[in-house]
Length: 218
Image (spheres, rainbow, N blue to C red):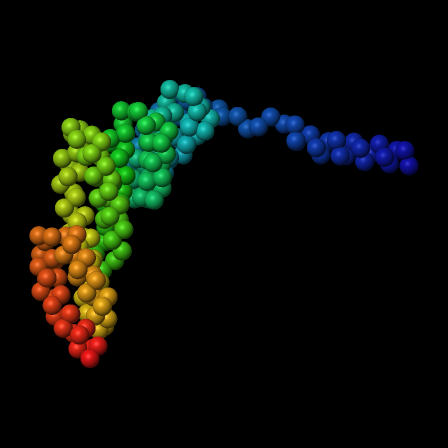
């Protein structure tokens, strides 16, 4: 019995040795990982760049290359057109480094990440709204920055998509004879997008809709 107990104890001890083993070590320096990330990025191997820079950030968080790694991860996601991941990475960078000189660039990249997702007017207009908000934030915070004129030029595209979407929805309600819903959409266009071609269309449709609604109520 005693020999059996000793055997059990030894078995448990030996099997548990792995619990005390040292964790896997990174066999590359911060400089090596930074170089690997840079080479991969230049070669447009953005997945490999993300891996190298992520290893750098995780293993050497206090390295002089760590902040660069955070930014390049976001840039790599942007080039991969993984825009949701890019937005999160850029926003995290701005939150963690609000005084960094790259912040105007980061805000512009957040805006572009949304801008590049703008679809036809029949689809969700959220990307256009989000892009417009970020472009306007860049201009408000950094009016003299070289990226601000580029941001201003893209705001019109955002507005065109947004008002186009509103008109698309209003016309849909019109076709389905949901006149009150259509009227609200046309009135919204007139109020928030004055001077656009869509507002002229809306102005022409409002009295027509009012007449249809009155006739329906009689």
